[in-house]
Length: 211
Image 1 (tube, rainbow, N blue to C red):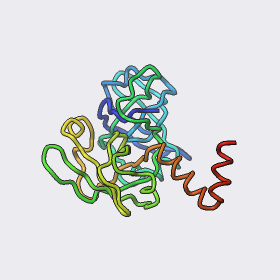
Image 2: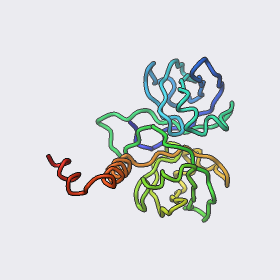
Image 3: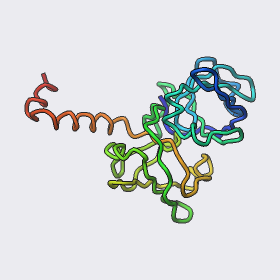
């Protein structure tokens, strides 16, 4: 589990397929030496497992499902920069929001506007994901915890302050860029319950939850 507060930006140095999974070598001197084998790291929003590390680089594996569900399958190449965050400790402050590192899908940037603090508008490829995004709620964009400004039927927008832009890869976004999107876990449960209740008598359904 993560907070969506990025610790550092890493750089992909190697990327290869190994049978049914993919392997990454990521350069990240700030955190690499402190990692341990088996530890979880959020790589641009996707929770990956560390398989090797030294003081400068670490390796992580990507399962085929993660590869297909993220932008990694489209534009991941050597020298690509990625946002990195180690898994949170239970004693840490939760300054962002609860981020699982389970990417729901890919969205594309429609436009980014403003100076200083900017507003970015994204269009999810799977429009059903918008049911879990609400105004003033939270989303994770490439692993970055952000507050939703507006959420419509086809797109949603978030605010990007200068600190976020300087500390993450979001500063390099341009129209058409793909991002990994994870909606708020609370929104997922609400959407699930709401969808389930449509196929049941509401009174009976609510009674079952309370029994």
